[in-house]
Amino acid sequence: MKELVRTINFNDLQVFCLVDGNEVAGFIGVADKKVEMLFIAPEYFGKGHGQKLLNFAVNELNADKVDVNEQNVKALKFYQKFGFEIFERTDQDDQGRNYPLLRLKLSM
Image (tube, rainbow, N blue to C red; front, side, top):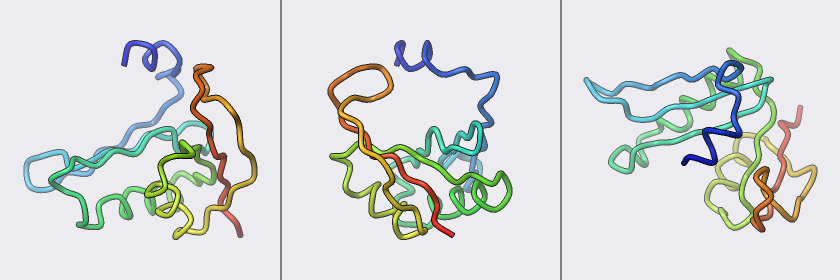
């Protein structure tokens, strides 16, 4: 987590939480029309919260890009279901680690 905090400019990142009852079920972070993070608490999986957050980011913040770790097939399918398409593959993540990324863009 320490490395992540150093590499994200939080001044440019808009973070929005989805509250279910009195608890944060998940959150999304967007910067420059790119979804930088989308997290849902495990106990809230399968309840449509990820879809709600992504719909908000796309419709209200004009988010149209996201990076997905290549091995995260579940996340890739989630974004593809919304109309995101792969336009580039990298051999390393943004921190220079050997985790290939798939760069996706919302198709119109």
